[in-house]
Image (cartoon, rainbow, N blue to C red; front, side, top):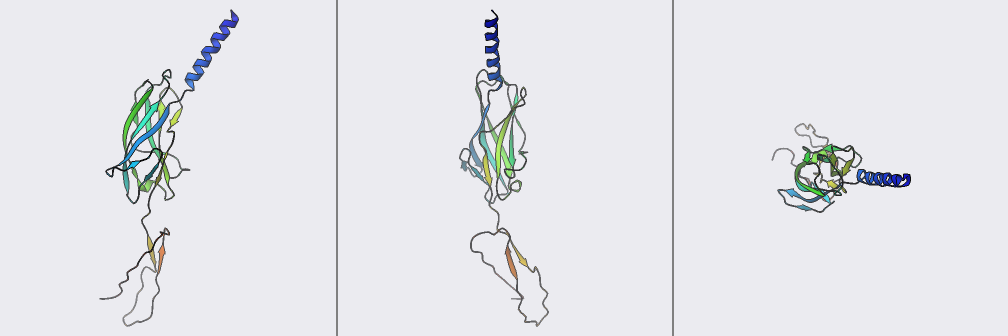
Amino acid sequence: MKTITKIIIAIALIFNVSTIFSQVTTTISNMATVPYNTQIADCGTIDLESYNELRLQFTVNLSKQQNMVVGTGTIRTYYKKSSTDSKIEVGAPYSVPANFGTSFSASLDKTIQASNFNLTGGIFFVEYTSTISTVIYTSTCSYSVIKTQTPTFNISPSSVNITCGNTSSRTFSVINVYNTAGTKSYKWQVGNS
């Protein structure tokens, strides 16, 4: 009898441990930019190009085992300026009902700002948390975020005073701040025309 009791307790513990350590798989799909209607491949690259901000519409999918119990939950959207920076939340969180069966989907609409990302690129991802667990379920993959830097040039010196009748030459230097590739042209207009 003691052996049967031990077996039943062991089976109950294994069942509880597998339920506790079950996963909620969190994915992002159907991402598109608005109003440009550019589809972004799953786990692909969000290209801000030279826009100051970009509106994104996408679906967050949650899936779990039928026997896994979850309380009410929250989907939060984050970005990182670069892969090594701290995460920063984008917009308001989305509430998920308790015990949603084996799957749940939410359509989200978020706007990201170009100024929030480094030139070297950043990342965009989502996380799901449940009220009955401290586990954070991060999306299975993140989207890289890139942006095109507007070519910026500085001129040195920024100004020169020349007295009337002075015919001495003056040298100006143009500095390509971001080392923007390609041929650039400069048009100079000095003095009265």
